[in-house]
Image: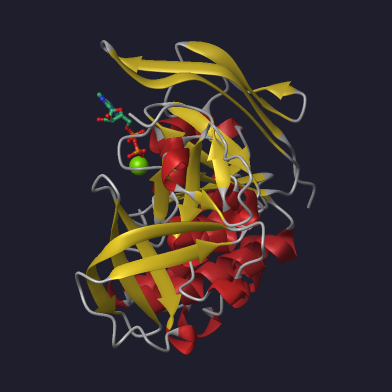
Length: 345
Ligand code: ADP
Ligand code: MG
């Protein structure tokens, strides 16, 4: 199956005076697994529906390969879609649901049946082909939806929060299965989620959206370690944003002028875990909480700003004895102190 790159070029969409997509441009590589990640209302679904053909952009264009699909009817786009709410046909059994896209494309009945069965085997549902979809669990329904989306061998797959209705364990299993299916098929995939960990786990690249704009597009580790904006830093995990004046260089060198981001888990109580060129922060312990695999400490810096410190349970010797109100110094390696241009505000 040949996958195709996608170009989103300066796409804009407004609902009345509300701008849902504000000049969005994004290139997705052939065969890539790209995730649109952002809070509710940031425009993820609108962008996905524009690609699917259900939302017409006010301006800009959409390409699949070299082909301009901006005005092409949805059923002509060769795109498989999986929605959050499954959208299966409840009165049909599993097999009929999966055969449906092939019937639409006038594939002969016998061939359609074989392809549907092969696809059901791919998503481990071959034993349930005669079952009514009404009698399936949430996870099984989502597998049927997946099978239905890929059975006609689309060039591109769009998935809008497909796992959000499932409980945590099943969600994690399905994350790996969807990623494996993507790797088997090599199909260009655009996946939507508001779940940071899901995006980090599954994606080749993540596009972080906020207020109808793409804030940053990068590989998961860069998004996490090197956020380009304060919004991305804070959306992607426990980020401490501190003014440079509150951070001491251990080696006494001049500090930086930008605002600094230090992740909670980059801070240590033990200075020996940090090199000479690391930094130190001093504060009063306001709270501590045991969270199973780690301790979360809250320190108030000079001036009152609070920061979070996450100490893995395995390294937490001494955390249990710390008393609130106590003066504590924490340390971070220089490589984990990331400068973000902009003001504290
Ligand atoms: P997300 O999927 O990131 O949660 P959406 O793309 O669904 O965001 O919505 C982006 C914004 O556009 C939201 O504020 C939403 O209320 C608004 N919106 C979406 N669809 C419509 C519509 N059909 N009419 C009016 N406003 C809409
Ligand atoms: Mg949405």
